[in-house]
Image (cartoon, rainbow, N blue to C red; front, side, top):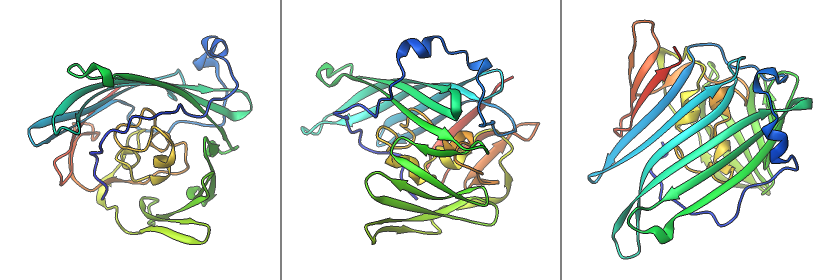
Length: 282
């Protein structure tokens, strides 16, 4: 299974920008927006916070979620503590903050506008900011037909293939409960990767929330092809986690889960020691 921890790559270019202006977004009324997309039913997750200690350095990723009146995701605010290694071998702490805003527009268009700020308290010349906008279109069933650099193909309500502008084609493998088990990636009739049966799930633990935890930890590999969403859990915005890419899995990913008195998952620890705390909208 892929590791959470990636060296942070500082991007040189911004993401794909759509033609809508910031002024148009400023006048947007989330509660009145009409779209075919509908949120997944279940306990509404307010935030997730993942922590991991690595060689005495604490890494943390906290994402807070804001919803509109229809319980659709409206905004993600993220605070991340990262550590970057310089060529000299010295490590520098990096504080990352980001915000992603979701806009549901006419004709089932969705936009995600985001900005990211990286601050190195002890090495300020590495400080940088990035902003970008991506867009996509939902079908009549509320699934994204396309988004940014790729088009989607569904089978039985689940995402089957994703076709990218860089000629890569991802074919996703699901089990009988719609959980993503793996994938293959092809380009120009050449097999780039075959990663089948690499993701495991708890057979008796149902995901009764509005949030797909398998997507959050990176199992929905197609989102990794979007610039600035390459590395989980650094991604500034989520698609599959909020049910925008067809049916999510029924089960929770493998690991140690703790639940509250109502049966909602509140703590997840995987076999590598990544610990994720989950809080809910009251």
